[in-house]
Image 1 (cartoon, rainbow, N blue to C red):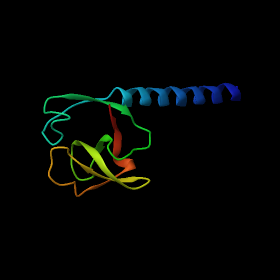
Image 2: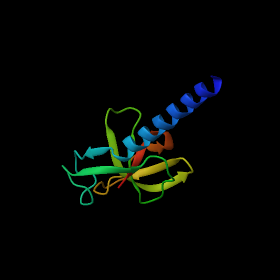
Image 3: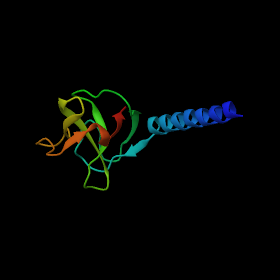
Image 4: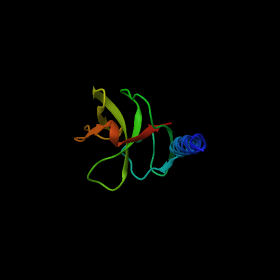
Length: 110
């Protein structure tokens, strides 16, 4: 009986992990703004590629900034260390003042 309970718990965790991965990979965002023009334009739809990977300069990411209530989609312009990044919208003149941490990144945009 103990073996059966352990098997059920492990199966439940595996199913939950799989659903989370599928959900993140299929997440779609409608762009509202022009900060990523001409790469991504207002009204375009973008899809998450992955939520658990190493991010590099040039990658476009979706992240949640701590003090705002919407998702930001910008390009990584500089890797500061293994888990923090500078970003900028392609159409913006200046880089973002906010430093993005790994824990705030939702996914890399496909």
